[in-house]
Image 1 (cartoon, one colour):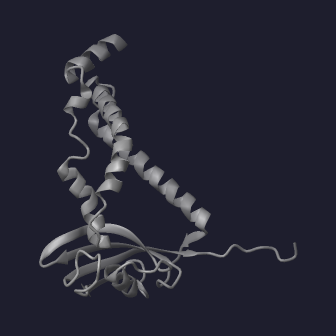
Image 2 (cartoon, rainbow, N blue to C red):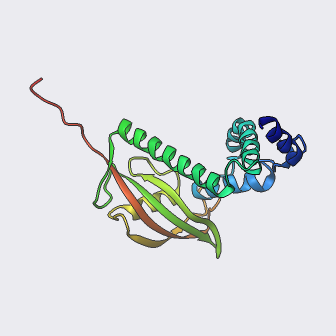
Image 3 (cartoon, helix red, strand yellow):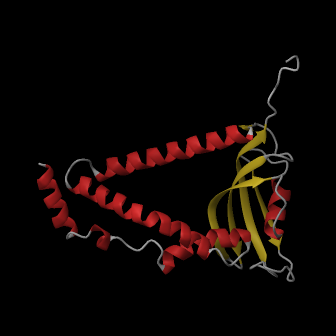
Length: 209
């Protein structure tokens, strides 16, 4: 039975499963991977970092995709069920990672306005000269981190005092003489909504010990 499935797999993929896969880091994929980060940070050189990371996972991605195609075509599981399970695993892994990082950093969800020392998770859209540059991007804003440019400074100023569920629209006016900022001399329209707020919670200790 296993040999029959292997034969069917070879027939489906022509013996070269990787040949049917699009390159991970073609020009379009690279631009999609770096575009939002470049827009958000106002920098122009992120390709090397993203490309290096992509290359480390490319071989694994090829094998996983080939195996997924095999088990779907062989009738072991439907494509819908497989995709659903992959999504569930991804969400679970993300949740566990976030919980571990929160535990390590002493962070907890809080139901109050953003204060100095908090991390606000915001969902935002940004447009410049009528063109969308960021669309529904989720980003943590750490109020303890010094802003790197005008964009981050204005976002931090606007998030202060907001609570989860609140939305705000504002304009970022980037100075024309701001060095290293791809949006120098331009205005950026931002719509930002707070998804959740986390704060560092002091660990109580027994002073008598």
